[in-house]
Length: 139
Image (cartoon, rainbow, N blue to C red; front, side, top):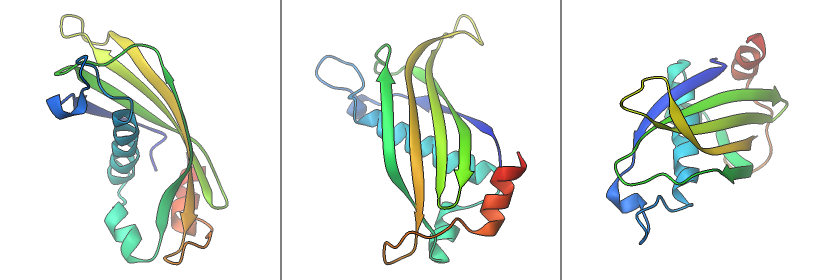
């Protein structure tokens, strides 16, 4: 399992509010994309996990807004693994607006943290499967 993953996002028109800024609810979607793509880049398909009766659900989510994203901005989302214990995984997020004239530089927009819980198809808390837990701990 990767410790950190980067995912580029282009802001679409339907994601912005009347002031032309990304609506605050969209950042939750961006963070979910980061988690799913991090899992995929680590060789695990979320769809395949669900097919085996493993569901990863949001237990808590915290965001700090630093600056707004705007329509057509190119963003870089960094998702970093915090911890993995029992039935929980913690992720940390950093979303930056890319500066096309200065690669590697950007404006910090949003930071956040989530705690993800593992449940079975009935909604009962379930320990993370050993293959996922071991991979998370190895890094």
